[in-house]
Length: 292
Image 1: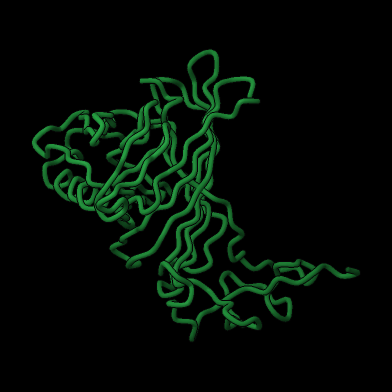
Image 2: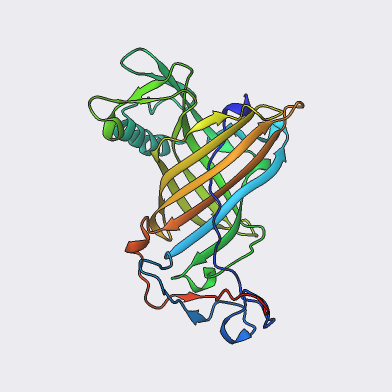
C-alpha cells in the first residue's frame, strides 16, 4: 500500500489544564490551593462563552515503519456484515455512493461520467494508534479535567473512500440532485474509534461519519512527498452522545518507506457549544505569573 495516499484528521486546541500546587503557577486554581482535580465552578464572563460537556484532544506524532501502518487492511473480525451495512448506508444516503455490503474488500463506485472512487476498509497500524492527550468529560467525574494522559489510545477502523485524479461527483444528502464535484485527493469516510485505557480495557466506542469531505493536498515545498489533510466528522459516542471532530495533519513518506505522521484532533460534545449545559460545570483558572 502506498501510505502517502492516506492520512487522517486533526486540529489543535488548548484544553482545560490540571491544577498545580505553586501559587505562581499560571494554571493554579483559585487561591493557589493544591488539588488533584478541578474544583472551581466555571465562569463565563463573555457572551456565548462556555464549556463543552466533553472535550477530547488526541493525535499522533510518530515515524511508523512500512509494516506497521499508517493504515492496514481492516481485520476480518472487525469488518463484519453488520458494520458494513451501517457504514455503507451512510455513504449511500449522504454521498450517493453505492457499495456492496456482501463484499468485504476494496470496491469501486462510479459517478454519472464514469469516474471512479476507491473504497478501502482500513485500520490504524500498530505503530500509528492515536494517543489521547486530554479528556474533560464534565458529567463523568472520573474523566473530568484529565491532562496530560498516558497510555490511553484510540484505535481506528473505517471505510475510506478516495477520489482519484479525475475528480468525482457525489449526490445524496450532501450533493443533492444536481451533484457536487469533489476534487482529486478528496477523502470521505465512515468508521469507528475504540478508546482503551492503560490496561487495554474498552472505555468507549465512537462512530464517525464525514459531514464535510476531507481535503488532501500535497505540500509542493516539502523535501519528501508530504500530504496535508483536514477532517470534519460527526461523532456518535456510547458515553457522550453526539458531537463533532475536527483535525489537521501531515503525512510524509520517507526514502526508506516509513511514514512520518503529525496529526492533532479535537473532539467535542455536543456539536454546538450553545447546546451544552453550563450549570454546575467545574473548571481550572488560568492566571498570569507574578510580575506580568
